[in-house]
Length: 137
Image (cartoon, rainbow, N blue to C red; front, side, top):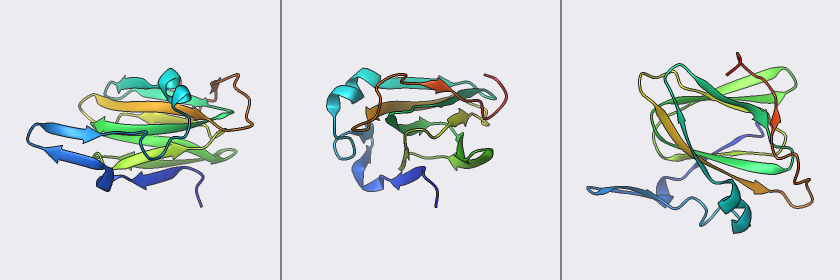
């Protein structure tokens, strides 16, 4: 069983003629102050990779909302897995200490929202540690 979780959030999203809506932290995240401090919007150009790091004391959430991405993560030392991310009905939850990266194989930019939540009893620093899984960014 993989430590990285792919959560179906189709019932938490709403699509209408005016656009798309998802409130990411209403149900999953416990400590809002961590989310607000770590919330970030990411764009990845076609053919590029971002990430190649891990968070020792933080759980990270990724929500891709435009484009196609390939999530890579190290399930065990030296064992890299990958999964294609498409659409807007999957929220990825990455546990502390799991190295990960995101590659854009598509012809258009990939956009996603990410945030971290500190895991109780875990160290606050360092928040991010480099851990290459793929070719350097």
